[in-house]
Image 1 (spheres, rainbow, N blue to C red):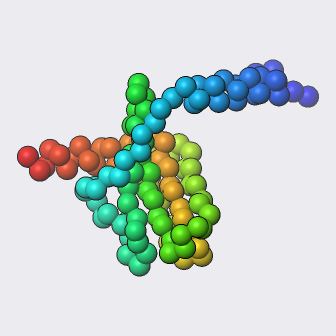
Image 2 (cartoon, one colour):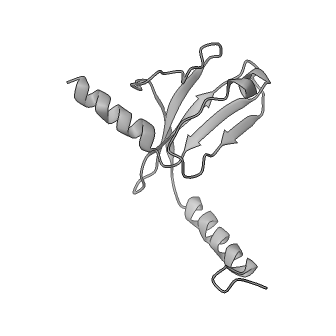
Length: 123
């Protein structure tokens, strides 16, 4: 028995197609962030390079990620999407296993707020 307020498979297909159509019209730039205020490595000191990146799309809120590169140039990439959590996570064990890791914080709140604090303190 289907819940009355639950979307049908056709509703989900339409929703997904709408998202794909929207993304196809967007231009997003990605930049390296060199000056976070907290521990830059998120506790990862045995692997490098690793750094924060910001994703900027006109008309949208900027959000951030944490790039962790392993030593293998053609390694696969694992994408960590934390859902609605506003935290950044490091994954040194996956990097040690031979994966590049990109943690994406789609809310962007953690790093954005901390960069704003650093700007105020640095004045």
